[in-house]
Length: 117
Image 1 (cartoon, helix red, strand yellow):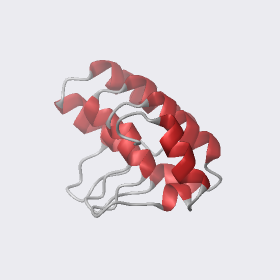
Image 2 (tube, rainbow, N blue to C red):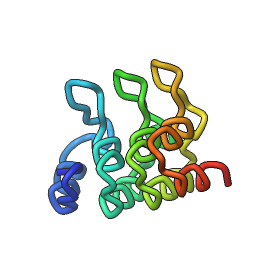
Image 3 (cartoon, rainbow, N blue to C red):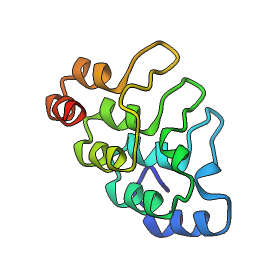
Image 4 (cartoon, rainbow, N blue to C red):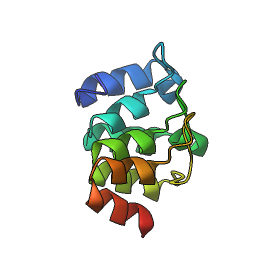
């Protein structure tokens, strides 16, 4: 639901569970799924509902944060929303790759500029 932008389904899951603590088999949270797929409405909802600031930097099993996934996919508005909530743009994954280097490698220059602001 988070990756496809089904905000109502995400709201229901969030309300009936521990919300952002839910993870799939590779450790990705609802926030990571939404960020990876550029689902700004879902990301905004989850960030608004999130009372634990550290979840914005929660890593999956490969060490990737929601910001890493958003930057990698070139989702500028999602990157901006995550940064406003304190996402760490220097946080590396398990291969020492950072959101900035991933955005640059993938040719997402508007995201690179946003990360450097």
